[in-house]
Image 1: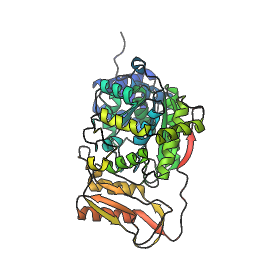
Image 2 (image 1 turned 135 degrees about the horizontal axis):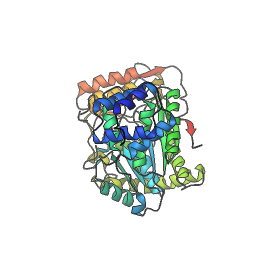
Image 3 (image 1 turned 30 degrees about the vertical axis):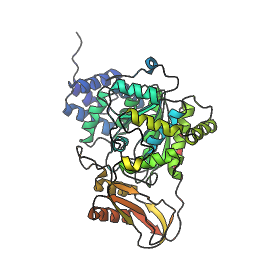
Image 4 (image 1 turned 90 degrees about the vertical axis):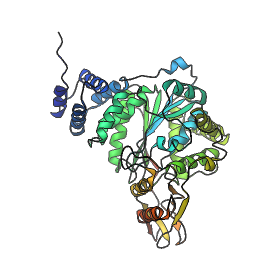
Length: 444
């Protein structure tokens, strides 16, 4: 007769700094999934990990247990003729890379089953952006998800109850118990969903700076090394880029506005240089990881062809239509997507150069406009946000807008405009920003 499993014994072992065995982690995760480990015990487990950490073997075991708590998609049944690739970002202000990268990869011969999230704090969420497209279904069933990936080459959706349900339940508990900022738990949360999605290769975009989850390069490096090590040990070829988030990425922040910027990028209407550099660096890394290019030079050539030919834009349009959105989004996006009616120009107090930007403050300005959540169940206003945001090093005159605020009334716009003005420091000399892609981490 085997001894009964007692969650409190495993919690106590981690509380006291011991290394957990894989079978102990398996039982804790199984209990979180089926409810036999209570929310109180789950919270205690998360807190013990938060303070005591986990070594790499524990992180791999936790990732695998959370991935196998639900369905693992087997793409071999679908008969796909290319690798299954994905990227994941730790989040930032104005980060619309996924919307651009995924259709580019699909146009290059990859299949991209992207499981994305909603906004958290001052950072925006890819699902919230896609929700601004009328009819787009971010929560389809698995059969639809499979079909759209096979037909369009790409589908960006949210986590379902069938994919890594233990992660979904544990994350909800972490969110309200101040245990989100744990590198072992973040690592397992991200990678369990990627394992469940059946990936061949993954590239992480780990952001650092004022607009990122990780404010310092050191913290971002710790997270990147954890994800690359655990991902490769768990069976996914995994690389990471560390990218700068000390200002917004691109020229917009806000849900509809970011969809519009992504469409402009894919169709060639306008491409911000920093957004382009990050997106193309991630694309080329993934094409090499997935075996679709021998090296980054060949990968870059394929990416440029996908954009110039319009094939990447067509993949995006096909995904949107297949998931319930309008079939003519690329033709008239500003007519089809919600936009707040009031536009207010934010001008500086004096002329000079943009020397620094508080990315977090800009993200909070979008939240206060209604473009993000201050509580979990809050409805988002997709039409508000910031556009034409100036970048570090650019010159401004007293009548040059630092940004345009989109709002529903002048009073709200005025408050946001003041926040933007304070967040952007203007000086007499031009500052050269650091490199947008600061470091590459590849499988050892």
